[in-house]
Image (tube, rainbow, N blue to C red; front, top):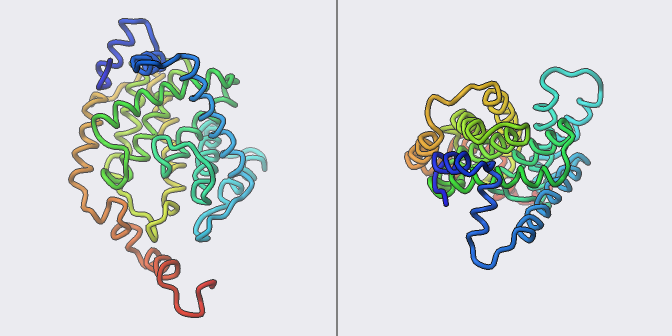
Length: 296
């Protein structure tokens, strides 16, 4: 039914549907699919997101020891009293870190669109559910909105850090989250598309440079940044601000940037932060420990 953002928005406007409704219609094009069954499967994914967010706030540590406990620190900061910043954005970053710390600790998460970027979408949506007092059913529909944007990006570019750098993971996740939040807040399909574009273009060029090759540092904190950018893009779109570069052109730019990235900056742990003194020290400690100091 649709292959790009222009078609998605145009068809949604013509049919009087949301982007979420368009994604459901797309799913129903597959023979043998049932609307209730499709929705039920998506509802399960939202419950997984909620469970992982709660678990991360308990203060998990990863097996490597590189990450863990930051979500709990942020939760304690929020609960301590008046804090700086936007309440929705702060809570979104808390949940984004929480979910990605669960991933780093080998817990169950919902890849959205990948495990490395799994905190952005649930971070934004869980914070929004609290802020807007939405039901789980409404939140599940928001996942269909996110899915529509992810569908377009995956079919026209990539969502893998190994292919296009971290822009393809965190950037895509932020675009998905921004569009979902716009529709959740009552915005229209065009606003959702512009929110997605503004979120993605603010993450263009972001490289994938995980320390020691593990999806932990800087991945966890980049999920927090992606969530914050998604919330900001949503505010701008709902205010009537549009991306000067159309959404499809932003996606194409991300694709071309990804193709031009050096392999050292595409999840190989050979460049960027992974190649710093600290990055090399973690690599040595985890993969080539000095005999007798394996547990140091």
